[in-house]
Image (cartoon, rainbow, N blue to C red; front, side):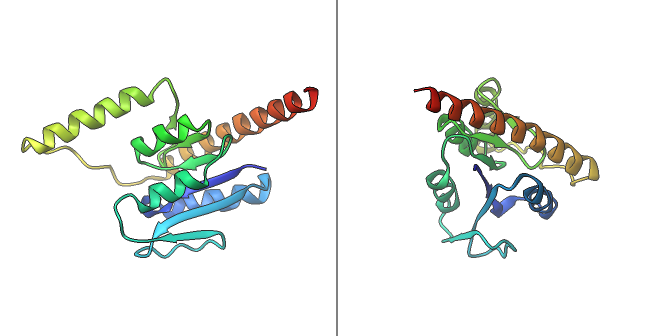
Length: 159
């Protein structure tokens, strides 16, 4: 059984509701991680301190190959991919080896621009289409994770 781990400090409630709904169908473990400043309604929840990377470290430490992580942090997503796990943003973007380098470069360029006094646009207000896109992308990842898990188990049985 795989886990779905949520970097819950900045995850919209609508995404958590989708994850809780799909948990009933797919029977995965849903683990949420957030700082003490956030109240998350989930029985399997890790509370971390206020440190800037505390939640990220807890997510990384609880992730194993084949898990799915929900995060909007591109740096965390890159680390998760490096562990052989899957990553998705609350907007439904599936992070992959094909797009993560571009996203990290974009993040770096925007940070440099802001340090120089520039202003960048924040996220748009969440819509029902965002929720639908998240659920569709999440189901795609569940299919990939389930298929990879079966392949891995078959390979282990043949050894």
